[in-house]
Image (cartoon, rainbow, N blue to C red; front, side, top):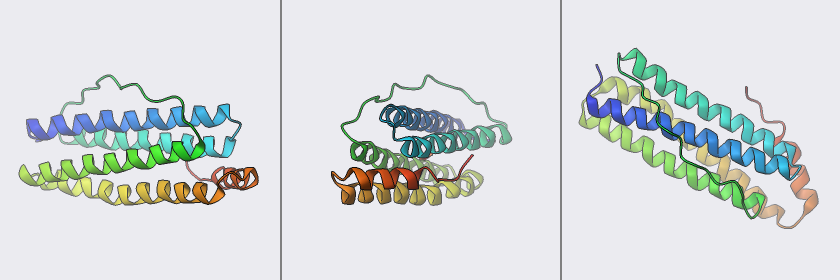
Length: 164
Ligand code: FEO
C-alpha cells in the first residue's frame, strides 16, 4: 500500500506530467504557426512522451492499490520571442521537473517505500536524457543565430524525430 503522503505526491506528479504535455503541445502550436513543421513534429512527439510519463504514474498508483485524482491542468504560455526562447523555456522546464522527480525520490526514501524508489529511478535516468536533448537543441539554435538556412536545416533534422 502507498502511504497517504506518497499517494498525494505521485498524484501531483501526474498533474505535472500532464502540464508538461500541455506546454509542449502549446510549443507545437507555436511552431506550426511559424511553418516550422519539423520543430512542431518534435514538440508533438515530446507531448506524447509526457502523456506516457503521466500514465506511468497513473498505472503505478493503480498497481499499488492507490487512488488516482486528476486535478485541473494549469495554463501554459502560448507565445515566445523566438525558436531559441522556446527551447530555453523547454530546458528550464525540464530542469524544474528533474527537481520534482528528485523530491519524490527523497520522499520515497523517507517513507521507506522501496517499490516507489525503484519505480522512480526510471524517471531519474529519463530526466538526464530530457535535459540533454533540450540543451543540445538550445546549443544548435545558438549556433544557427540569424541564419534562416541553418534554421531550416535544423527544422528538417528535428522533423525526423522518431516516436509514437
Ligand atoms: Fe516527463 Fe519531460 O519529463
